[in-house]
Length: 480
Image (cartoon, rainbow, N blue to C red; front, side, top):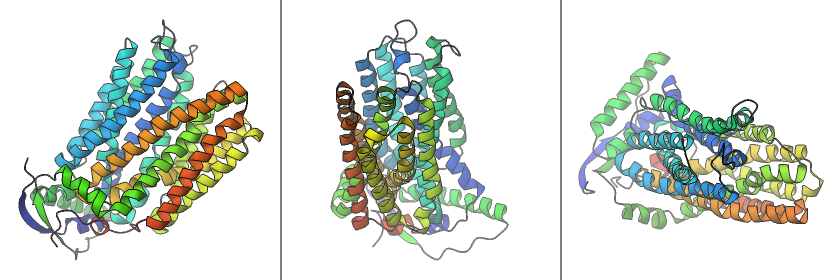
């Protein structure tokens, strides 16, 4: 495909999409695209609870603790690779092709995991499961932001990204019967857990087939007739549902159409035209990644090693439910109070609370630690979800999916690779010394990075609430 200019077009499509009132059609977009985060939360939580089930030679796969850690690293590596690989393809070939492909990759890989006959098969399946999920983050966030009206974009994006924790809560509760040999045979329980993920994914795929391609992507890539047809169909559906005629749009945008945009141009745009926004996203993603690893990665082991809790599923479910509640209940404020105030507030507050928890570790019990975590992550989950919102709306449309992928990969690598290495070492050291306060170091690091991210948002944040994507960052192809 050539990146040579193919024509110029003046269109009012972005303004027509942004002026729409909320309708059933938008719920279809939310359900079809957003529910995959529930799968991700389900996947991560179930896998995190399966260490003991995978170790026996007769009912599991005979895996060692190192093998299980390696499988986790394979999933993280796959997510990073998938985000970057599918991210650039999403910008080049369109949102719909990729959000169907990435969900397909996830579905096949997670079902393959359920049939794993040996550790090697399991490692490969976990890598490709991560690849599908990483690709989903890029394709889905870009599609959602380009289809949801400007007035609702903040709350929808934050709530959808926070739905990861709805899946995590469900996964925590599912592990209780699935991993109980008195309920389900030990050789089948962990396999059924992966199989359920695949079944849910197929259901989502059926709904997702009805979500259209992004009209914004279409008209920039020389397919304005398709874009016009999609928008006209949406308008007719909304008018029929509301019984009111939509107002006429008054603004237009002129762009130079291209079949594709070179990755070199994309990279130069991000790092030379928007260096402050690049620093902002880097700070937000690394901060939230370390915050979650500082607490969540150590949480299960802390409960079992220091507080003697044998079944952590109930505690994890409470923790996850508070994460989802925070993202859901606070999400409207990102549109009303604004991005800068809310991101700064949630990041700084959760960072301060985590530092206080670190200083109080020697006086906490399993219950009070869970309460601390519930309060901290009620605010942190909304802020962390807003990091994805920020990366998806403050860069030009042609770079959107790749920018989401780039910062997601950075955050995932920092939180999923460096984090577990550091915090795993702290847990071992704390257990060896019978001193829970050793893990406070991890809390302090997560707190410092989160507070720093909040301060960077206060200084460099973009007031994007209620604004069209094209006014926040003009397309690279815009006609001056």
